[in-house]
Image (cartoon, rainbow, N blue to C red):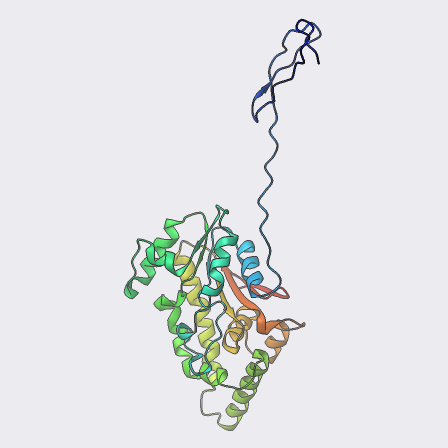
Length: 297
């Protein structure tokens, strides 16, 4: 409005965020300063990828218990059938997705993503005999945060032994022909049952596998305790051996009825990522977005 004395236009000075707003009453005197409310900052919107393995990985991390540890080593690896039982020999394809995972969580202060390169740069013990100490150091270094790492949990000797004991039995399972994990697992189970009927004096390989899978769960609990009782999540591409572990963990047994309970509805298992999360004595198993099983050990 024009200034009555000078006749010139008069403009109000624009306020900066946080500046005190000044008002005048009808006599022209300034009123008490009133704090100017600042607009809320909109949260950063993460770009959600389409349905598929990367989406499975990101959803699992987003919903993982706060402060837990998620192992992505080989999470999208398809085991070579000739070396299927030795999980440490799986091709590690996690690098294909670890960059996308890092970018997705780059502004999230509650999640730390450790690629293989970053793990090499950490000032912690790297010798194989100090695997337990190394894992403990990493957990302590990022206390209170969810840790996502491209590290094979089987460098921990306790975790590795149950899988090593199942070597020959799992090899027979993984060498079966076919691309559908459920069909190959069912064929192996049927074959072992028939073999046991023919030669009851021999211990069926299925009992070796059941015992080994139970030992793997016990070892996972030991690892969780080692890392300060944090929740621990393991992920893997759907193959017969990993599917057997998910079924055993989620249902508590490994037979045709357990398979039916786990896979009771259509799902994209061959492109899905299967995750197992242990929180205390509570197990949660997921296979893509379609299948979730939970139970207490």
